[in-house]
Length: 423
Image 1: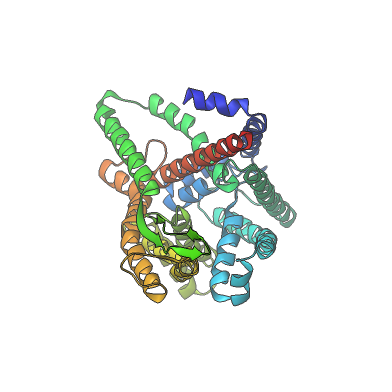
Image 2: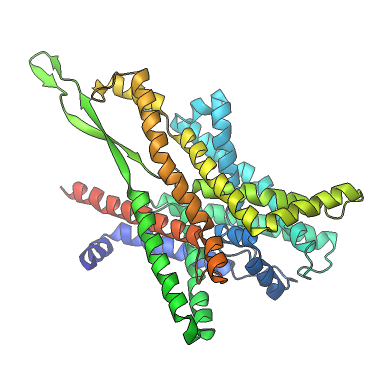
């Protein structure tokens, strides 16, 4: 490993890219500690620590929401915008065609950025309304001018982070959006460890060892599921062209256990948070029926058992749903047939597509159940131990491990590419 690090550091442009990414992450963390004026930070942190849904939102905003910083929304609106255009690509034929071409993808990316602006404004107002309606005095009485200024500031922070994320992605040593979330999660570790030492009691030693064992087992499981794949054998027919023979080789088609990554959990968080946020707007409604209904929705989602079951089902369902979006067995079967490839024992064309769909659904069952268990792991731990996770929950571990694996692979690819350039 030391030799690899030395080799990476000796490559000038790769070293510069890594330093640039680290500087961008430092800038992000600096902005994450600049709170919006007039906020009761202590009351805000208390609400986020006691609310599971808001705690998960804080994870996906890079840990900048619990102090109401100027980048409190993180890249959440950008993720929401990306999800919207991915879903539209399924139902709008023109968008589906555009996704297949480089120029079309560039246009869709530009539309995604533009759509992020109004989404950031709406989500910023929704979060402010949610915090103002809480029992704790977090924002106090703010006038219309200050409210508009706060919304503009928070929205500008989201656009700024979106820009930083794209700058990081251009360096090709990791996904910028994922690295921003990763930095927010890792930044919470020192304070969590500090709290652990301050409140440590000798009677908790076995409980802490149990947490450590579960964390190690979870990390190992995440790596196995992330890297796990089933190799479908593919045979290419031998073709004779003049005096030369082409093809006749054997290879395999890798099908990953966790094709969707962490996206289903992001989808599930968005859907889980939405009813509570909407209900907050109707708590003070003049109609008694609407007000009671709003309180009922809020109370239902505050119930840990209902929240856990609902969250688990959503993660499993969205894993299947998102895989259906990105995994196209018809296209794979068509490409194999055009290239003279076939799966032994399976006819080319429709039969190959059906076979790939069948295998994908069987593999996906394991991946979806694993993601669901990872998502509700903090709730399960709290139920059996009565304590919150010591540092980061299962979803956070999944993000951290996935980002590390992806970044390491991209850096290794950059090193390999430069080795070929030297040859």
